[in-house]
Length: 390
Image 1 (cartoon, rainbow, N blue to C red):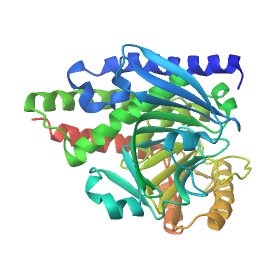
Image 2 (tube, helix red, strand yellow):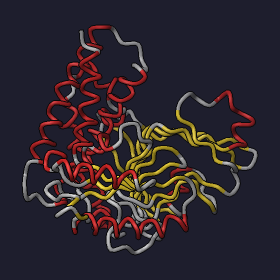
Image 3 (cartoon, rainbow, N blue to C red):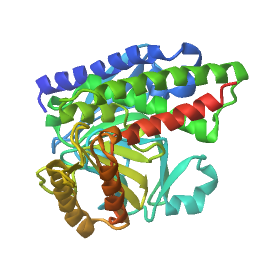
Image 4 (cartoon, rainbow, N blue to C red):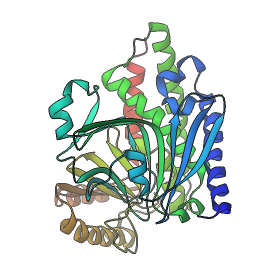
């Protein structure tokens, strides 16, 4: 990476944070700390941009409190994963292969640390790696990127314990990535993912911190209005008769929470183990370590059936799913399922609705749904919010 590219990447990062600073003004200041991750609220920080010899690069906040944004460049001899996480083994639990991926509020540790220092592990989502000597927590693929948000590493290196907290980091598998993605769009996607992720936790588990009744009601009213706006944005987009598929890809990427509320991870257009495909899955949903859903979306104006037969658009989507299955059956253990989103329920007659029901009954690992699924997910959470408002 030359000096010119160094400057471009620094500008890329600054655009991302500048956009975040505007987006957070949507949230009343009195409960921003309750709903958003700390890194979005920093007025200043000290950070590094890492560049390794293989073309990978990464950004990491190393000190949260500072009077201004400070970004320093650092070229590393090994891989950036080792520089950032302190460890990198020959085998990895997480190999990130997709774009717009994030790991949020996760504790990464290994069995040898748990055996000796279990009492030191904080409460929260914990992923335990079986061995400390050959396994590193994360490896990023050549054509991938991932954000690490409020994660911690509790590891053993030899007989020495290693503890590190990462408030925010962003890794890229290739330097060319920064020319292909929009930092402003990423800021929007991350902002809404954080905001709606907090909403899901509040609705299902309550508030982590003690919150007085007045603030609680204000938060619920804020979310109610926000959900109404998002619902209207979806309905408006779905009513456009000739919108390109990219419109809906971007919309779902921005509001991916509503694709599957409660998912551990939702990534946009992941690679499937480095295989060259005519078309990648539009989304990968990780429900648990051994349960995954791969999603193909088609614009809502296409129907799943034509003249009581599978439509040409649905047949094309099924061919893509068939290609993914061949790869995943060979590479992945656990339960893999597939989802195709196409059409609107109101556009189907009764016979077509029955055909859809029968089709789904005949396929154990595949479901075809309409775009009404997303609206239903928004509606369920909105109703839950309303039920908590006196």
